[in-house]
Length: 64
Image (cartoon, rainbow, N blue to C red; front, side, top):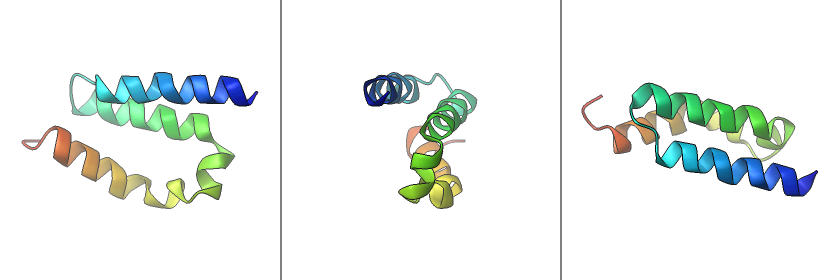
């Protein structure tokens, strides 16, 4: 179970790094948050989701 979670996290992180555009980045980030599920809530990720998405989009696609 834990090994599968880590594998999924690494795969989704690769999707985030290689996202072709803003929508792909948001989709990949959303998939990562969805996969983390209750773990995301326990580490506080859910509360920071919008802020982190805006930061990722702003730094990756500054003209967006």
